[in-house]
Length: 193
View 1 (tube, rainbow, N blue to C red):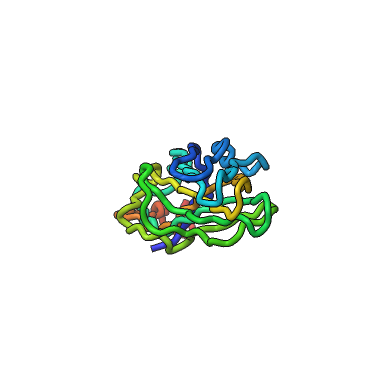
View 2 (view 1 turned 45 degrees about the vertical axis):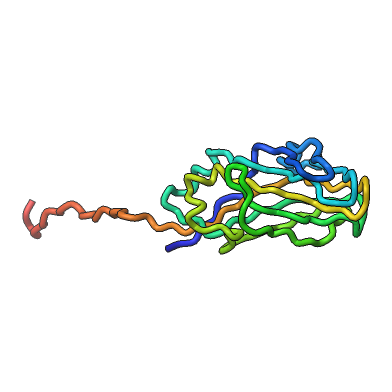
């Protein structure tokens, strides 16, 4: 079986999901890497609400063959914090139709004060989900929940862009390659016309 990847793809729906001690303002700004950011101003030193990123365009997913076996999922997020050594990613977890499950891939490392793209998951990593949880037909149900934590009140964590890439194996089943038979050429005998 051959290994492939598709993406990175943008999510198209974003929301701030309670509970938490700071809502994500303008969550839709996490769609593009354009220096306009979804931001969370922490009301207290605790976890933020979840920034939920969902729905990959069906036209993007159409490039993954229906019989493919998803073997890994990678999410990238472009982070920034308003102060050094103040905030960190505390949860980065997949959800299916809004239901969170599996394992978090958050690093727990402090956010930089300049843009930094962090990569979560990758080839061979299904985040604690099983292969049967992600048939190609269910990829449009995939989302990611992202949460930050802060040691300080009114520190601001921001995200500029969140994307997803899928890794998969695929071998066409029952593919028939037609045999090409060259047309017959008449035998030419010297001296005959």
